[in-house]
Image (cartoon, rainbow, N blue to C red; front, top):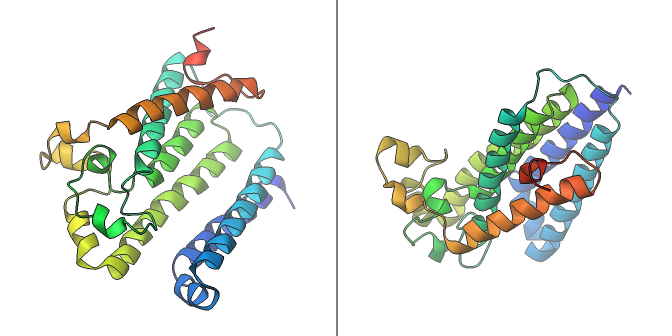
Amino acid sequence: MQPMTLLLTTGAIFVGSHLLLSHPLRDSLAGRMGERAFQMVYSIVAIATFIMMVQAWRGMPPEPPMWAVGDGLWAFSSLLVLLASVLFMGSLIGNPALAAPGARAAAQAAPRGVFAITRHPMMWSFALWAFAHALVVPTPGQILLSGIIAFLALAGSAGQDRKKARLMGDAWRHWAARTSFLPFARQISGTSPWGDAIPRGHALFGGIALWLAASWAHGALGYMVAGIWRWVG
């Protein structure tokens, strides 16, 4: 199998297994296996298919970049990854979109911080991370890999809206009415004040720490030097 075809195939398996287990097959499998066992199976399938896809990407032959990448594009991409890191860290606490016992209670709170930016901060963190990588590694293989990850994150978010509305009813619909799918959409439209979108401490400082550590590890592990480390040290 050609390397690009293998990447497409493993990417389709990665996306397809996620969407099937998250939506049409979830209720029946969780009902038979129990929620905890289902979550274990879901995690194993997710990790296994992701590894398959990454291995296919690593097996791609060297490809010429599709555009030149200078300091300006690196700086913009680094800021995108910083925003993604803040969104991710903020999404770990008080997130109604997560399958947590307190999801219904969290949906009653006023949207603040990353949840005032988007009701899907974790999924958008993955999409922004993928987009940033495609900008600075503009090869067909990387663009395909990034596109697969971004598509799954955003399609999964849309599916999550429907699933949560079914599971949580008015609690989720009320949350969705006070939040936006697209980042900063409510602030740009004037519906919500920009002050609401200021990240809380755990999101801001945790995101900065994650961004610094991950971008440092990028170079330390032998990949391209990324983030602020391209200009420092």
